[in-house]
Image (tube, rainbow over all chains, first blue to last red; front, side):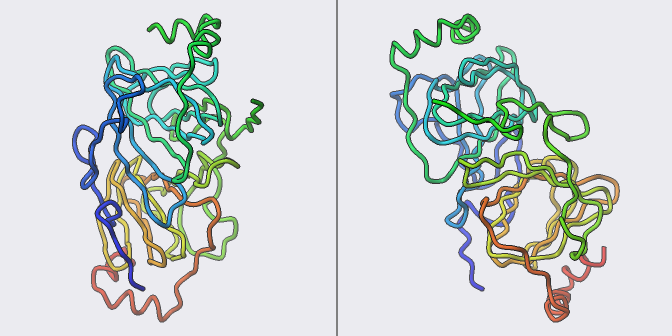
Length: 155
Length: 155
């Protein structure tokens, strides 16, 4: 049975120092610069024509954060490196290595690295998915009405 | 927007000692005992009605191995713990923490833990997938014609 193995799906890709992988590009987190974020990189670990899901690795440098956003697709997140905090809806949690976070559909979320450590995490998504939506000023105001959310967003 | 959060998709599930997770059952590797394997457990980390992919964690105890099998669905594997070797087609590789292995469609594959360490790995699959097929004696003979495969299967 013939198989086409693209560089991204070569059978074995070894982990390398500093959380990189053979044949996997370390990319800017967002293709455009329209969404606010700070010090985040993105690596696509599994994306294959015959897989309905994708697995990516995001790394937020110490003190950095992902975009505050929501969308119709679900995220399955596993922390691989370091620690930090996440906002899911109005819930704020400390997260560390190998903890699992589920982001349900249309739920505001953001990941923040600690000030003294990176936060690296795997993220499982559908390969076909909708685009994230950014909060309006009214959305942000509604989120900030929750003291723990206001403290998280100001950190 | 209402969301139904099942125990398996509770927002945060913490990693626990010995590679277990809150609210995640550690199950036998195979539901039936018809396929040969040794000392393997299975935990489903992400399986959600709104996710097309699933992420599972398999752990092979020292000296153990998964079933030699193939199927039409693709596996995306990341080693999380320990080390061992894998067979993909007729290729045998040493694998260790955070290495990535892609199993293309209809490719024979097996994972073997080292004799002195477990081999724990994440496995990304489609939530809708076909059942594995076991090798016939003829298939095994064809695989064993490759010396590195014969050595792997006898280890």
